Length: 102
Length: 102
DNA sequence: TCCATATATCGAAATATACCGATATACCGG
DNA sequence: CCGGTATATCGGTATATTTCGATATATGGA
Image 1 (tube, protein in one colour):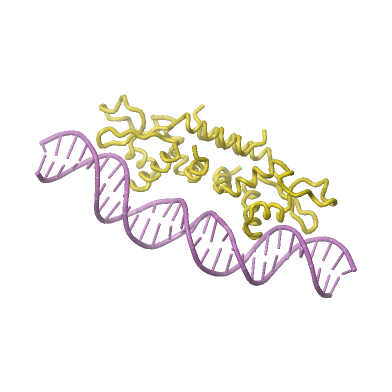
Image 2 (cartoon, each protein chain N blue to C red; image 1 turned 30 degrees about the horizontal axis):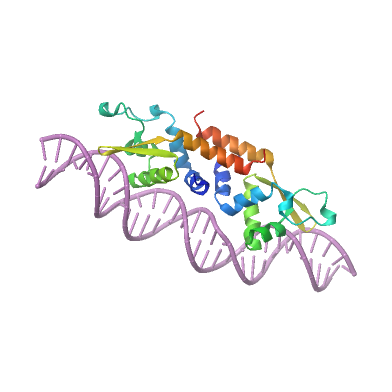
């Protein structure tokens, strides 16, 4: 867990917003029937919600994944991104430990 | 408390290190006798420890102050910077609340 | 195999950040 | 008021980030 990479990934309002949106699947359109049992949200749905270009969102998700804050799973042509809850909590804990006195 | 400003200020390893150093006054040379009762550390001491130019450290401290993470007090020709513990804790709490699910 | 769809990667332009040295400002002691 | 010291601000260069459109890659279906 690289605190530098984590902070760089979080230092952008859209990337933070995406993490927040991903807390609740209902922030996105319903999954296709064949994806009903899968975790995560495909890039196209995230892109539509964020209203940035496809390439931008793809690279944003790459940054978040590189920082460990999300996981990705490919299913067919789709890549599904989901929050990595444990990693997000660990990052917050580490940052708090480093920066607070108590 | 502006989370965007806070993350921008924290998104630099030297600025984070300064916050950590400021946890413990003994990370710096002893204060001058006439400053013994003052809180905080002067820019010159921080600069020496960080080994970056005076202008860089001055502007770094300005960023940290702008984000509310440190306070500054001028005494004579010196500016003393100290951690703003409450603000640092509040920032960590806010970030954790925003980003974690629990 | 060929096409359409979903995503990733590339290359570029605009903007922001990391630093620096030089200079300005503020303050102190004489 | 003057020189010296501490800090702040300015202007610049190098590098990184944001964001795009174009293109490449992967996959699934006719």
